[in-house]
Figure 1 (cartoon, rainbow, N blue to C red):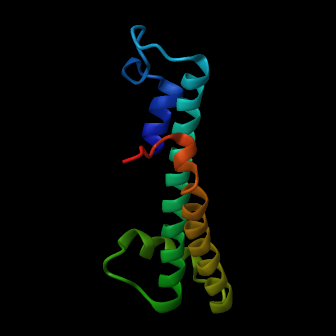
Figure 2 (cartoon, one colour):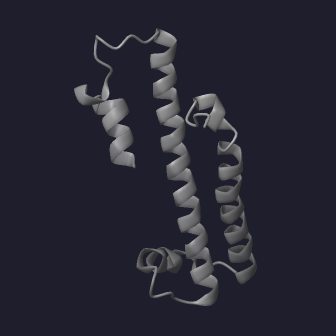
Figure 3 (cartoon, rainbow, N blue to C red):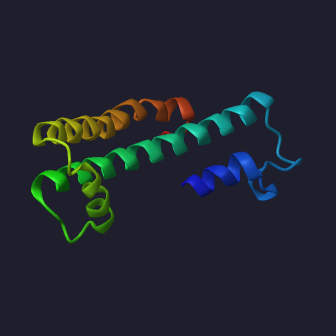
Length: 116
């Protein structure tokens, strides 16, 4: 996701720009970039908080063979108390859920949902 955001905002590849025959207002062009940034930031923060939540849970309950990356990160939390780990797990889990609840009302604003 970092690559795709860098590609859109830093590298600014020609393929990701709107060509001349397409008529868009400056406001629409700016809105598309803003929408792309919001969606990209949402994905990074949501997935990151879910990943951290999983690592905190692994630090509490022990390794999980199905989550090798979270197992590695969980070793960083070995010095934290179980109470601190539980609080951190809950905070990151609720952050991920809260982001979804904040993001859902933005669909009509971004015009990502079309009426049936």
